[in-house]
Amino acid sequence: MVVSHLSDLYRHRNLIWALAWGDFKLRYKNSVMGYFWSLLEPLLMLVILYLVFSNLMRIEVEYYQLFLLLGIILWNFVSRSTSMGLNAIIGKPQLVQKVYFPRDILIIASCITAILMSIFESVVFVLFMAYFDIPLSIYVLVTPVILILLFVLAIGLSLFLSALNVFYRDVQFIWAVVLQAGFFATPILYPITILPEMLQEILLLNPVARLLIEARKTILYASAPSVENLVYCGIWAMVILMAGYVIFRKFEPRFVEEM
Image (cartoon, rainbow, N blue to C red; front, top):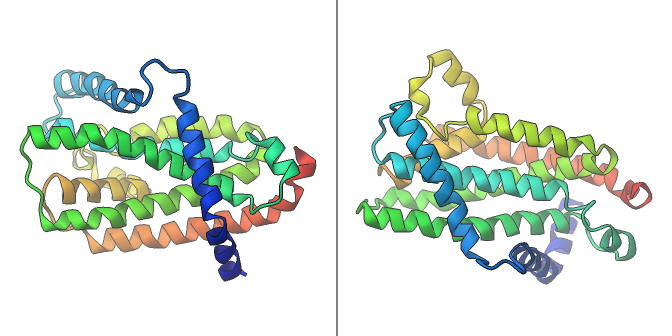
């Protein structure tokens, strides 16, 4: 059944791309600055957060500007993909009600749109890397693995959230609060080593936190990734994806009548 569904998704790959690219262009339609907002948003966040945490809170981390910017970009992807994904079904009622296609296409397309936005944001990060003349090591080749795991996590969460959001609209508001709390509970603004060991263990239960740490190690600090962390995140990514898929498929037949 899963193999058949994957084959069905592959046959609809052009539709997935058309939806993803269409949503991406729509976000900047009639905007004077257009795609430049994708570059400006993380840069503004970086400036504000850097001034606060490097000066007022005295966090001393090597290449803290890039440490912070990478955290912002990766967290923005998780936040955007799940926020857009949970609204993917209720946001296109006419398409869902009148045209038959695998409904999870809408969730996958939303996550791809989030990737496109993150690619634009990454331009700022690359420019900063060049400015600070940070050398890349062979460990940077692990970066695609980290990004794929984040993408799988985002799809799994979005499948689960989007299905529940059709029936319980409170989900979108609850998730917004969870994301706000997660921004500070994930080591985006600070190195996790400044926390007590017990609190570190609790925060590291979150696979996004581990992936963020591994991304910084491999890209910024030329350190070998932790195989244990990658395996842990890979297992959780597959568990969340399968759980999200099962729940989505269970509720999918009732989407049309509920909308």
